Length: 252
Image (cartoon, rainbow, N blue to C red; front, side, top):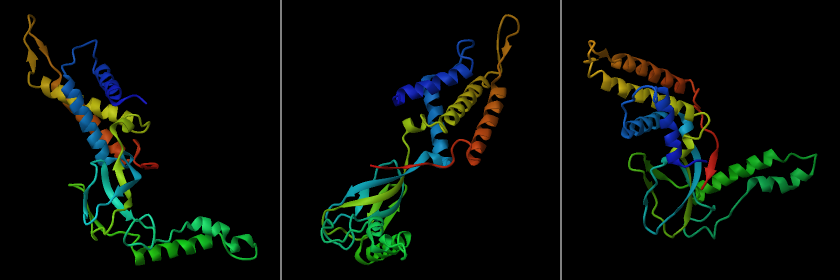
């Protein structure tokens, strides 16, 4: 996959070509292209589920410290787990670990066709695991601040251990610009924003003086066209045309 600067330049080249670059002057500087792209990425992150992904992250704790600042990429913390069940202090050496599907598979019920087993056994062990986890502290209570990215564990850790977090996090810019669902939308929205900025600049001067009476600029027409395109693209996100449903999760 190309690096981020190459991906950005691909977007900028597309915008320039669509605005007639090479045939007419496009009065935009690099800062305008970058601003338009960032606005496009921001709008996509705001409106599309495809801009986030499910992840599992590891977080080491510090004794008697219950506040932790997470990376800006983390959007929401859904659950916080200990790596084992039955241990409220220490790294979980005293906990009892279950893998319910393996237990179900090797269960004697599964070996006998006349008895019930398989998924029923799996469901039984899953319920048992959840019950034991709630009784002995495998599931950790916490508060999450989406603005400050501060995670507050309600019970101060009594020993150092590594917790497992189930989170939603932003997909990196480079991944969005390589996504087959999202990159076309991002390119077209960047084009619309650049077109609006170009129209705004040209509308400051209705005409340019010349030897034959001057020429009229198309600033207002560009702004109206760009506004219509942005509204259409935003509606596409509502209809999930640009990938309104995120897919997959990662462990990291």
